[in-house]
Length: 324
Image (cartoon, helix red, strand yellow):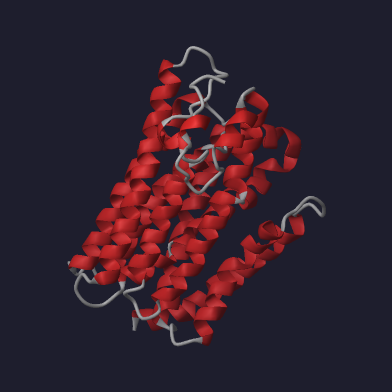
């Protein structure tokens, strides 16, 4: 009954989202726009179309739409706060908090049945997203608006206040909405803990160790270094130039493997593949690489010895020093 009502009201939500997507696409610059930027506005509509054409409807559609509405409301509130504070980088903090809140919302919304596999997934998500949220909160809160957003604000001029709603807040909302699909499948998978649950948890653990370990090493390195031009190239940072991104990717693959316990869980491979592309070739690494190349004199030598994303054990003869 509840799902039936949500499907009826969900049609209104889809119409409103389609209108927002149309405005979003219309407002995009005509030049220097990647295909993925044009895909974000219509991505949720694509998920709904695929789900509606198969046997996933109506339960999956109702749950997916409710999650989307919840994310939409909270991101709009965060956007209004950013206008008051003139600080769009609070989205970085909100992003981590939304990732943390989404699995809890799903667990409570889908019944909080106490099933062991659902509790295991909730624990994984709470530990992973909770640590990430605290780290981002500690890193960003005292420093005001991130220079990236400040430059974007300056370039966009008077239209930044409304354009940021689409290109900063709704964009990251779409990311969380689609990336949460493995969590939705995992929270509705039947039966006790089995092979896919254990396999997913092990993949997740590898990612957690990489991400948490890399963040800890970077924090310690920044505190102890004597020159800002120095590079961290030991520990996890000797295996890959972006161990935190690689770790986060592994964690999402862990959730997707976990979701294979659901009859339709194989669809979770699509969000996981997108996470891999985003962290490896998309915005995440490309922005960081450009910044590091400009600010670190020894970064070219570091790139020659250490792979960008997928880890590789360093050869003894090519070990880099701690300084650029």
